[in-house]
Length: 318
Image (cartoon, rainbow, N blue to C red; front, side, top):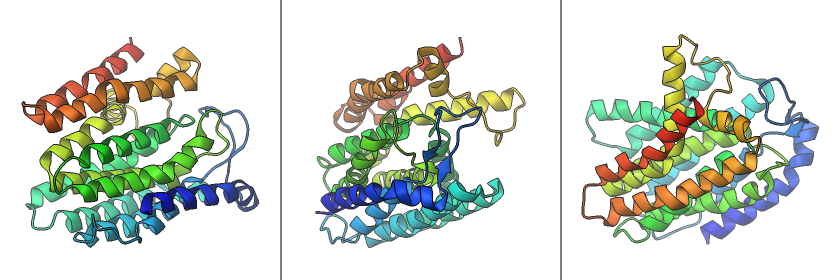
């Protein structure tokens, strides 16, 4: 029921969004690093974010024993989505956005990892903060982040369904999937509107919290989340480290990510999106299944899951 509500609410809000965006000035005008050529409504991510938050109010036996995770996803998700929406319109200072993201991450991690050693808490806060930012960094092509997020939600939601005691993980993952489908339909290239920071940071926060929740339910599910997120983790992290090694500022805008380099080489956004989808279906999801049902440690599946993404990073910089 919650998944259906998320889908329907997202669909309705997205129908209303374009006219509202133009009226309120939420328009992304192209500049030197833009992948689009004409002014396009931006900030549509607030539609699927609100759809998810509303749908999570629907009572569900899979999560009624863990209401805290729902409060974290709803409260923290709403906060980062609203800050992202304001940034889509008024371009907030970097330090203010980082402060909100880290503050939200801190509250979420402390709530989800109760009675965990302080060192683990600190590392988890940094990891969640990085997840929020890396999804935002990777939002540069029509349908790209939507394809990745939908793959992660469907993969994690489907696999969790077969893990005892993990129906709550499946539920929260599939609710986001339900809200993303109407958006991806309209964001598929050529996009009719963009999710903006309001959508990207919401997805980063939501998926990061779901990953922590999944790991708390079963360590193997934490490995599954990591495997499915690997294309984005490798691209964003390697790009950041390479740019730091070159003496470039980490907050300076650029178009140096692997997916952006591959797009310039192929001159096709569709090729990049289909390639990402193929990577998930043919490699990441099988590795995720191995992590759950294989006879070896999930660590091996995580290691093997990095190979295609690392190859693509090297290829794009050859």
